[in-house]
Length: 141
Picture 1 (cartoon, rainbow, N blue to C red):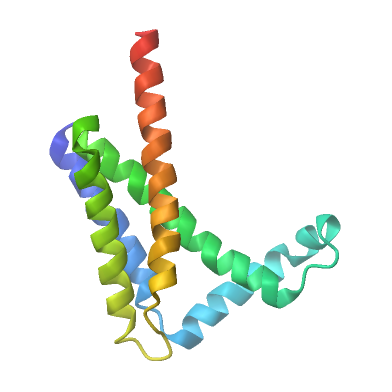
Picture 2: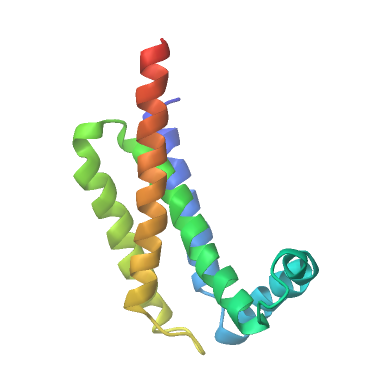
């Protein structure tokens, strides 16, 4: 895959994250509640004592982890060199920080340093999984 396409995928994914961050507090709550109501029946089968508030928290923070997990993979793929690991992490960290700063200007939202940490957990897992897969595929080839 050409390098510019890899970076285009990174930028498109960042735009996708930005779209969610740009939702007002009310829109964000509606999105979370949609997933809570959709998944509640299934979750209650395995975790019958899980409260709606706890489930909402897991869904909201799980979304952060998932979105930044994918970002970590995409940035790793675009950077393409394990020696550039520092820059891969830095790009994900800077985007997570700017994402939370952006939310300070959205009605009903707030920037949260804890969300940056959660984002970096997701990014770190994505970066780690990407590097494991690349190293494993090089051993096979």
